Amino acid sequence: MLGFLVNPVAGLGGRVGLKGTDGMVDEAFRRGAVPVSADRARECLEFLRAKGGIEFLTASGDMGGSLMEELGFAHEVVHSFSGRSGAQDTIASCERFFERDVGLVVFCGGDGTARDVYSVVEHKIPMLGIPAGVKMHSGVFAASPKAAGELILDFLGADCELKDGEVMDVDEEKYRQNVLETRLFGYALTPYKPRLLQAAKVELHGRTDEEAKQEIAEFASEFMADGSAYILGGGTTTKAIADRLGVEKTLLGVDAVKGGRLLAKDAGERELLEVLKKERKVKIIVSPIGAQGFIFGRGSQQISSEVIRKVGADNVIIVATPDKLNSVESLRVDTGDPKLDRELSGYRRVVIGYQMAQRKDVAAV
Image (cartoon, rainbow, N blue to C red):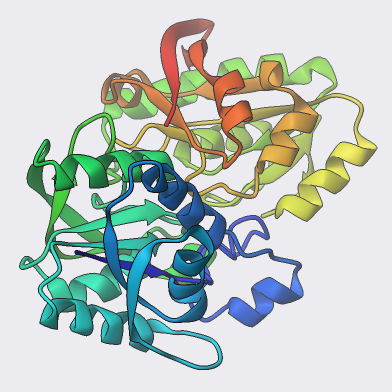
């Protein structure tokens, strides 16, 4: 028997540029946010439904019970709540799971949800995350909802090992101020297969890495003089590009620039779509996230599938220092749109220095 939980508000802040949802649910809805976690959880469960025979313990309503009923899974609700759910409901549900000796706790959310689950199960029960949050730095998340389904089946069939996955969290208030401060809460047992599990995010530093960023920035400042508007994803490499252009970019947010002029700062999906309405030629520059290798689907959900489709997959430019690129087996995409993920997949050119590029495989997960 498995425990299953959905954080209904996980990921709300992504597309609207809030860099997280902790304490910002009302603001996210005010900005027009649409819930995403239920769809991510459904994608995983639909993969499992074809296999059959799995029984779940879960919480009521939009924390899992409603999806179980919709998809016809055998389940028992062990925690009920009213109104809007919160961390206390995740914790209470996990306490019931622990009492019932479940073999695995599956949760759909982000780092905050992982932290709440871990606060109960610690290193005693394996846990696995279906990625739905804005920031997912922990090493307990599957690469995608489908990958989570595959890992669950492998776990039930004793066809995967358990590894220690880092449970991390980010100070969201500082994150919104473009300061990345992570904390390690502990190590959780996690079903593991390299292709199916994401790595914990790491920061790469070093003189050669910094030199490569400056070379990339110099080259970018030249090709960006083509009259196009550019959407810049978050990260230190894209920040180096903006610095070279003399544009004040948010380090961890998404910005739009044209001709050395800022069009949109710390933009959400809505603001980016407005830029696309006004500009005839637009391109996207993104850099992979640490050891995870994601170029879309982690940290910059503002660059949504709709934004990418309007820009066009051929107008996506990937930049990365050689050290960062060589630290991952392949780059990854998880936009929430499987068809678009396939369009973005395959070997793509990655700018790694001044007039230097390397081909790297991009995989849909």
